[in-house]
Image (cartoon, rainbow, N blue to C red; front, side):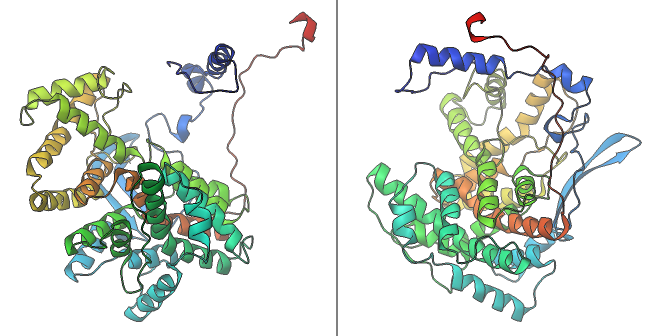
Length: 457
């Protein structure tokens, strides 16, 4: 690793850098020790599969089968409460309506609602979309943040102070809190962005109240735009994106974080804020921003976007840490679970194509398609691996949001606006069925030593 100088005005810079180098050196664990002690690094088995640590009925990711110890790749499937995501999306699209509220109901309660139940549930959400009195001024506008995910986490923690019964972990109370947070996440994110744009970019400040007769995607687009205008296609595609991001099984990092923190008996706001912190990371929910930045870099350095060889050569440079951010990662390519394909990608890719034609960005869409085609081969050759590499949903979601004219600062918050549904379902499941504090074991490999008096060191 290369140490970077950090602004530490209160410290002696040379001494601080020395401390930073020492902290890094004395925190390094040799990789071979993980194999020696059979430690499941990243809670992964040696074949890359996740270590089984829990049971869930909420979401399921099916991407391969094990046959006599061998992983057999399959086209990916994603299930919400046993219903395949393709069936859900097809149902909503054929009935020409938005489906995110219905997905929230399904994840929370385990079954699809009747028309009456859906209407009643939407009524609960609509009554909760507006933030508490004084919250916007005191918790958002008076403390703006450059990063909307941090602002979202702070807003969730602040909701504790506006709750008359914040500590009660009964299912009734947690469900009430969950419904309120599901309803309010778009409002918190939109207002957090408007505060950022005003205080850090000197843009006009405008705050639009959410409307009760609009879907979450419609309300969000309305609240982030000065003219409140959005097209029917824009709202439909954002609704689809939220449906696809609402849940991904208990093993994804942020859902697992929800289980871990909830297992301690803490309050809802602390558990959900922790999940937001997990999702913020570039290796989790923040990956779509990195994809956009990477493709912009490719556009700037590849002269012919139709030249597969030129694209391939530049992707090799990225893998070899000689281009883009120097991390050696082609973002959006590869997934911890999916092997042959990510079903979410297939659904969003088609909408990206439709939207690119409407927006006159067909050439850029073809570039994305070519990167999708070439990158798995480059990764396989550079890492010398022989296994399928699927393009994940982050590869196209950022491109879709860009075409929707959504600021990139909101890309990951949109993920959170969707995933709060899954987090809430997992929190309730942990409260009802968990029982024990989640506490994995760590092997200490530090050699024993004796105390040395200060004057002898």
